[in-house]
Structures are given as C-alpha cells and as structure tokens.
Length: 209
Image (tube, rainbow, N blue to C red; front, side):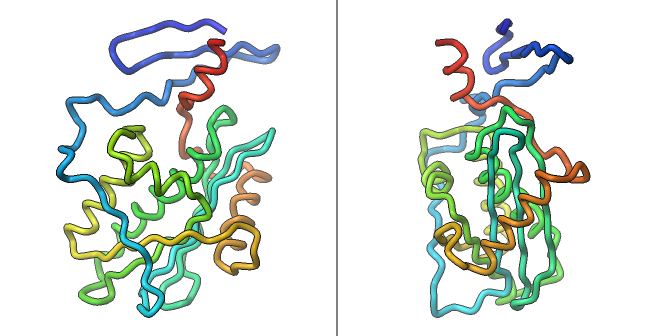
C-alpha cells in the first residue's frame, strides 16, 4: 500500500491487487471552516408511540466479506411506496452503510413536497445505535454524518417533523426485515447504484499499523 498526502483533508490510497488497481478517497472529516456553529447542534427527536406518522422509513446497512450495502424501505400511510438500495465499495464500513441509508432516505423525502401541513411527519427506524450517537456528537464531522445533519435541517426548515427510533435487528420487525432483505438483494446483484466509495478512518489506521 502506498499513501500520498495532499492538502488538508485528502489522502488517496492505492490498493494493489493481482487483477487491477483501485483508487479511493479517504473519508476525511468536513473542513473545520465549514463546521456548523455549536449552537446549531442537531437534537434528534424520539419517535412518539402515540403519534401517527405519514411516512415510516426503515433503513439497514450490511457489510460482508464480499460487499457493503444499504437498503431503504419507505412507507406512506402504511403502504410500501419506495424501495431504495445502494452498494458501497468493499472497503467501506458497516457504519458508512447505515449512515448512507439514512442520508438517502432523507434525500428522498425532500422530493415529497406535495405533502403539506400535518402530513409532513416522518419516523425513521434504524437498527444502528452508533449512527444516531454520531449525528448528535458535536465532535463528529464525518461526511455522511454531516450530510444527514444538513438533510434534517433542510427538512425541519420546511416544517417536517423528523423523529428517530431504534429497532432491534432480526427481531421479526416487518419494515426492518424488508430493509435487510433489500440490502442483501443489492449485494447479490449488479444493478444497485454505487452510493459511496470513501475509505473510513478505521481502515486507514489499521493499514498504517
């Protein structure tokens, strides 16, 4: 492995295999001058069990020895309406897959501008505990985490209520099981869009040891 360092936040790592050479970009933190003021730190709102949400989102990220994938199920008024699946390059992490799923789901909701008033309510179900913690951690400025924050701010500015809840994986939760199955479809097929290809910090640290 050869590492070449460029300015500030960019490191290009070239991994040589017996077949061909891959070039990836290090998943560096957002440049500090672009950080949001600490007073504007995101506070994730918990899903209210008594509330009826127009949109229910279920996200799943999965990493196996051969693939890293994200699956997203979006229900509107309890009817399955959108299914999204993405592949990440194999060097990406499971956390990146979880984060990409949430970011892409929020991006999709941005397009639902025809919903108005009380219809603008979303419950996001994730089986990741790390991602919500990362979003609310003011010291975490990773790209996908910042993207999620930006999407939440845009939606809330447009009067969307975005609430989160954790669901246990592989516990017969219908939406979560669908998202998991969709992610596995992305792993087994080539039609899924490549959604992310940046090397996580953990991989760089491991390779440098």
